[in-house]
Image (tube, rainbow, N blue to C red; front, top):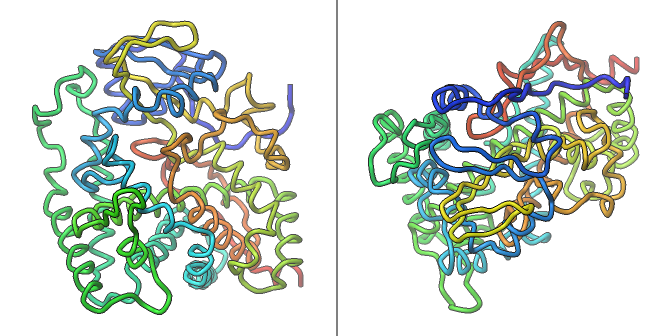
Length: 456
């Protein structure tokens, strides 16, 4: 038994719950419906209106996400929650419609393009540093700060220089949408067909979502009129993208839906990764000190640039470990389209397949000291078990923006740690709550002390 201190973790279910109890728990915190035995068993099955199976076995996960991916499309509940904001974009589309979009968009996220966008990330990190410096060593909610910082990045790398792009309106629309999208209904759990309306769903955010789409459409048309900038952003690159097989390019609606997907999926998940990384650095001062030595060697006292990111090995390991302990997408679901067998157990057409990534990343048969913060477990990536670590999913539908997210997180985290020593505010241990993403309950409150004062 390890005596190492354990950072914040979520209490998982220790007894079976009926349908109404499950619904109530899921509306408060989706993590609370994951059974604790999911961290020790390869598969857990049950029925809550619909038959469901949670799978934690890497071989079974590989079958679902790679070998038989067409037999396990995203669940209808997932699609119905996301479609009002992001349409039939890459995140939702299936089959040939997904494949051509993926082929057209993949070159956008090349290493060269990401390096070209890195100055935007460095500038946002420096602005964040100034805001944190103004906190005067008072407790500061770094979770809220990281949301602001990453939204600045994604708005700029998506619609850079567009005077007509109302970033605040889009941010407001996304926040309201995410708040309502997490409201699971009894009809969802009973498997009631999606064509039957869910009372009240998106009622409050409908006008904001409509405005958000209009703003994006107007920005796309304005960009068509003025042409690409000197350094192409994601919109420029997507507009130029073409499916090599069909020669098809995205129209305005397809561009808008995919850009909003990048904004919705990109900024909050990266913000959460950064917030939890800062918490873990404050939790383990020895790791934070080692990162600062690495940063000083690579960057001196300055900010992290794109050219530095690849050499910051410990910083990357901390981000990887934060993604293991606090994966933003902590639970994904699929629907079985045909009968199958997983872990020797029968799966029937229509069954819901759940991959509880939070439990997978803390599974006692897959990880040593699974609840502990040990970034050096990622020192050898070849030792990481495939399909046991899924911060960005896997298979052909692995997150297309993973490289952008990792680069952004490295630049921002490194820049902040090169300027401040972070400590946990007295009496604060962040709780974990999952609605659509795994968030800190009531923020992550840290103190930031300028390095010059620490060293002086």
